[in-house]
Each structure stands twice: as structure tokens, then as C-alpha cells.
Image (cartoon, rainbow, N blue to C red):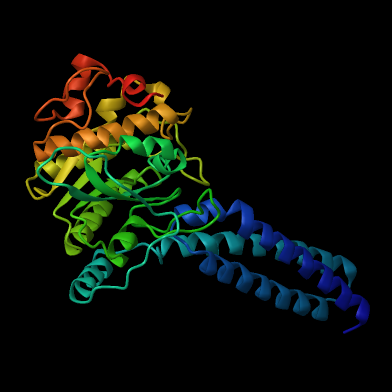
Length: 363
């Protein structure tokens, strides 16, 4: 092949490679994360398509005689290539290669029940010591969360309101319940809730609080809920406390113009509990508790401001105390008396208004 023709091929190939790189790193990144297609799988699809295109270019330039015919063929080939890559990517997503199936999870649950895995602790895991509260029993609580409740980690002063129990926080942005996570705001991919539960050793932890779901599709939530609860049971948690979702959220799932139906997810939660098959799962109705305080949250209605972080921490502490029939860790208002037993906070907030966070915690 003449050197001039080879140079044309190399230039076109470089252009295609640059286009493919942009597709991989920008346009399709959010789509990939949302549809559970791993980065490696997407790269393979695009690179294979580019290699086929490059070989086709060599063939076109070798067999065509005139510049006019060659240009027409190249134009058609370019259009077909772009169409082929898009079709291949859509096909890759339809295969659902990385989403967890009930069979896969069941086999993992059996495996971890028989053999305890090595202890793995993320660098962002935080252990908070309890404030001294006169209760009969101190719970060991493991909180797994996404970027909403991660406000407790990003605003660490709020952890003073986590009282009456020992707590371990594993809170990461972009975490999903079962499916492949998107890239967190701190620049890394972390394990989803299911894998985190199955792959970790908890010691004496007996209660799991689930604050994950804002990055998930409501259409898969029912199955995801079942898988996470099954995993928690297999790892020895005696109780799961599941936080409801804020229904007025304008939060868009990362990388895509899509807002999940959090009201539907709350309905599914309540339906699961009402079925009687989940006596070890308790709903902590954070949505009901925070309905009248949108000022606790940033504009998307999900992520916490400082008073939101304190308010949610206080809510968790009162919920644990109520479940234990213990005194509230704090009175409802500054200078008041702590109730015994502590009432569920969402059941009294309508009549009392919010707890006095400013007076109780000095914020």
C-alpha cells in the first residue's frame, strides 16, 4: 500500500480512537453505570468496533480505484460504524452482565454462611463511641449508606447525636443496593450494599441500618430489597432497620436524566413489612419525620445540611431507644426530661414539631 494511502488510514483511525475515547469517558459513562455495564465490558465493545472499522478502512482503500468512490464508501462506512457501536452498547446493556440474580446471591449467601470471610474495612469506615446512657442493653449497630446519609461522615460533628448504642458507619456516595455502583464523589468505586454486607465480618454487630437506595431504580427495588434482607440474615443480623426515602426529591440519578419514584419505593417497603414475612425488618419513617423540614436538605431534597445531619442522627438514636423500650437519649426540648420509654420519633413529630436540635446540641 502506498505510504500516502497508509497515512490517510492512520489519520482516520486516530480520529476514530479519539471519538471512542470520548464516548467511553463522557457520554456513556453515566449510562454504563446506570445500566450495570462495567467499564471493561464497554471498552471491549467499543475497541472491538474500532478494530473492525480500521480493518474495513484498509479493505476500502485497497479495493477502490477512484477518490470519488472511496469518499462515498468511507462516508457510508462511518455512518454504519457509529450505528454499530450504539447498537452494540445497547445490546451489552440488555445482557445485564453485572446485575445480581437471585441464584447468584443465594449461592453467595450459602458460601458466606459456611465460611466466614476475612475482615475487610474500608478506609472511610468510622466507629463512633456511644455517649453514656443508662440502658439495659447496648446495641451494636452497623449503618450502611449512600451519599444522603453520608452527611453524617462529611459533617462529623453531627455524630455526637448518635447516642445510646455502639455504631459503625460505612457511608459512601454513589452506592447502590445490588447493582454496579457509579463513581463516588471521592473518585472511586465502592462495593454496593449487598457485597458490603456479604463480604464483611461484623463481630458483635446485631443491627443493620440501611440508608441506601437513592441511586437505584424504583423498578428493581422490590427484588433488591429481598436480596439485601436475605444477605443480612445470612450474616447474623437479628434486626434490619430500613430508612424510608424522601418523596419530594428532585435528585437525578448520577449520569442520567432520571429521577426514581421514591414514593413507590416507600410503598414497596410498607407492603413487604405488611406481608408478615419480614418480622426482623423495621421501617424507620424518615420521610414522615422530615416532611416539614425541607430546610434540612440541599436543593435536591436528599443530601443533608448541618441541621439535617444532626436531625437524622438524633432520629436514629431515638428510634433505637424506642425499639429497646429504653429512655430517650435526649429530651425533646432543651431543659426537659428524657421520656421512658422513648416514643418512636415519627409518631410524635406531628404533634410536637421537631426536636430542639439547637438547644440540645448547640448548632
